[in-house]
Length: 457
Ligand SMILES: [Zn+2]
Image (cartoon, rainbow, N blue to C red; front, side):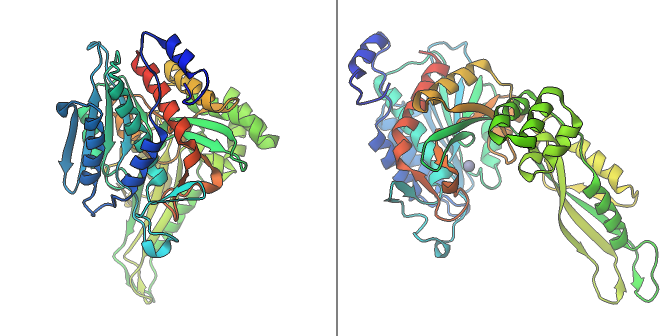
């Protein structure tokens, strides 16, 4: 229900006996957002626990029981878990998620101090305003309102806030391990709406899958020697041949229900040969259509795994045969493909038994979540209630969010941010990050509808 509408009272009466169903107050939600930006929750600053304590104080003031709000310190950061217990203990919980940390920001580069929240020209500016403090503020305000009403959902609701999503994701892994026995997770840090230049909503994406991220180092070595006496084992030559083969290779085209749905829904908007290729690929899997899409950097990631050389280092002196050459290759892996399978393919392409191929770090792959009818309907209805006529489509993103570890743990996860932005206002991770103030009331209504419907009244 929209606050302030003439029919509000009638609607509230119709909703009886479930009680009042007003979404949270927009002014209160904005105040939470502004206050939260002032916490410098960059890695190493140690301010995430303070922000968690601030959110916890709001939830407890609204009536959350002491034992239902838990802050768990982890090194200099922390996690927050806040629960509204459900009436039916047989139902697995609904998780809501976001992150409290932000990407570093250099004040010297910003027009304004990134950690002094400012409201100006209809925007709130500050590091983390978009990523992810806006939606965290909306969820905290909504849960506080639901608690104040004394609302008892059928299904337990747990808000999980991680503390190092932008860096190490250690807190994310801990949360995914602890809360893996859940019905699903709604992640505020993915998906969301697009406004056109005039500020009218045109598109909303539900993020239901992510490509996995993995880096490989491919190394070649040789005894070396004097450059006046070249040998065939030169590591730079071997590296160059291997890179040529990797560059020329196309991983097989892949589709899933997520990418076929989003390609079909995007085909008309894109139009022309590319739009036609989108439809043909979605409908038939035609590899020629996949190749047309692969010619466009903005679409290649939607049709196949991609690997690209990103860094190289070799040699040690101008007059010596190189003793080593190494290239780093970054891969964005289509859901359903394992990181080991990509390594096997790279090994085949390198075709040099003396080369070493190393996976860097400890990457995790995740499958796409199924496009659950309840999520698509509830989120679709909540979005079209605020933005009539908008196209709601599933989406697979190229970057990773906390959903990665929850999907890997078996929890279907959906990016359903309540933020609608113009493309030119998207400055997440960048300078002068901002969010429009005008959408706050509708964001609160969206969360209110989605949470009530999926947790059950
Ligand atoms: Zn984020």
